Image (cartoon, rainbow, N blue to C red; front, side, top):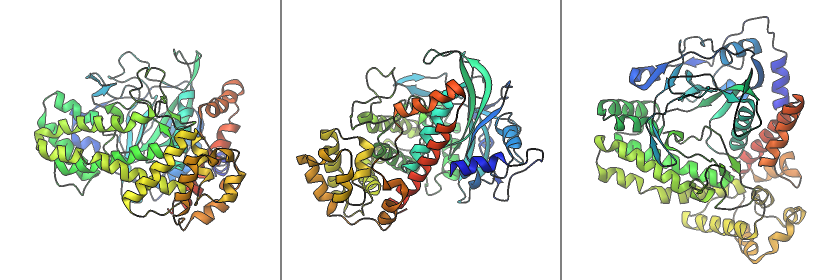
Length: 487
């Protein structure tokens, strides 16, 4: 639990140097691509480095949980290199479509790649920053991150992980003691630097840059790197694209089943591993509303909840364009055309997993998911509450205990619940429903009002109690939802 991890971290002797543990396996690969792909940079010097969050759960996977707080801050606040890793951070180069307008002046403007290593499964993981200072790609920005922005990213990643979404993880958050001026929140405001743990920072925009520069050699090198490090099952550019299309389709389905709105689905925010990352104006749905948007500046609803699958498909088409010099239009189009069916099957499977029900036949699974979402939309029942109340087969007693029991008497819900009850619960459903996380009548959620309520005591009194308590509760909910899904 988070309280235990915080207590353990606080008791680590800061007078003694502590290095990585035996599971730490540094493996720097990005530099092998060559200098066309990055710029060496230096981290900003911060007035303060106050540790606010350390993710020991994630750190254990890469052998860094043994670091004392003092050494944690040394590496993730002052960015002294980890042993055997990058000596100099790298600001990655890329382009991208931003709200479908091409921008050739992008790149890591307030972050950098700090380290690469293998986890216990052999995956290549990155430690990269947000708010670590200016780079050649800052475009006049200060290269900083507000503390509120850092807190919001931690909360987003913890909730997404709990709900089974393939997401980057917030690894570290350190307050840096600067006053920042921002137009979208009360200023001056506190500053922070975030470190995230991700399975690749290679984006669609990374490929777009070399198409724009007409550098086929660099594109070939990038595809070879992507296959070797992330999709070794692929045999060529077209089959690599097939894997990316599948991974991104699954991500879109996981967002849908979690009721999550990313907010800024530009091509530089979509990685080739289909891992969700970079959380700015995100939101979780209060109720199922396809027109719900997260970003106040998305006035046309381009990235509204219901349009996210279309946005992902559009972005994948841009990646396919980049691969034309290395493949054929026919092969790439065939791969792209699989997206709708992949999304449908992934949505059905993900939805039934969240409900703690076994899958059957793809077409029947999809019809059942559609029944569920149609009832959810028509009734405007609270989104997460419906998954919580109907978990494990929609038991009568569980529905009766819900604060929203009356809503489930509608014709749409009666039909959906009847179909849900015809399915077999997963093997872990009974244990999950008996856990404290599912014992009450209210699920864990991360709605905007809750986020603001967590931030208020931090801003006013530097009181992190609600923040730490929420992370502990979300992690307990995540353990239960994993059991419910049979994982």
